[in-house]
Length: 196
Ligand SMILES: [Zn+2]
Image 1 (spheres, protein in one colour):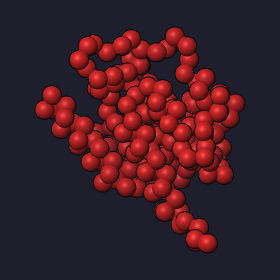
Image 2 (cartoon, helix red, strand yellow):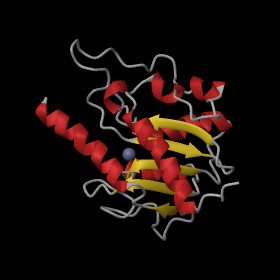
Image 3 (tube, protein in one colour):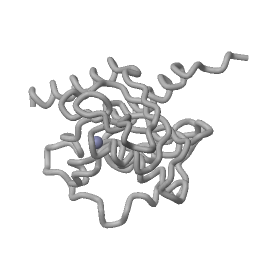
């Protein structure tokens, strides 16, 4: 018998999954890369709306190669994975296709409704204003994120949309979970982008 993980330990375990999602190339592979023991249901797969697939990238450019590696995973109240998403803005040509939005949409499709009460969203980078707004709209209970994003972050950096006392719904927020791993992933990406 092993002792049940502490909250921090559980958050780190979930963040490792989000980091793996971030490191996966954009496209169906992200959604099909199920966590052990929790294959995505048929509705999660259907969350990819027909006709929204983006055109193929130009020859010589890896698919989604320009997409910044950010990953998000939504866990249900029981701790089971509901859905995962990766930043696919370039891949889909969609300004709203941030990792959190992709994951929230798939999670809502999976549960069959927009309310994600009691759910936890784990994301490798501090959410932006758009994603923080979507998190509030979905009534997500807990947000766990990795690295701070001083330029666009809306969970304490530039704004604090998630904990603004004027909102009636405010999720619990846990920042800096495996932040170094998330930052390293981004550094590698931007290093390669600069070299390319
Ligand atoms: Zn965002």
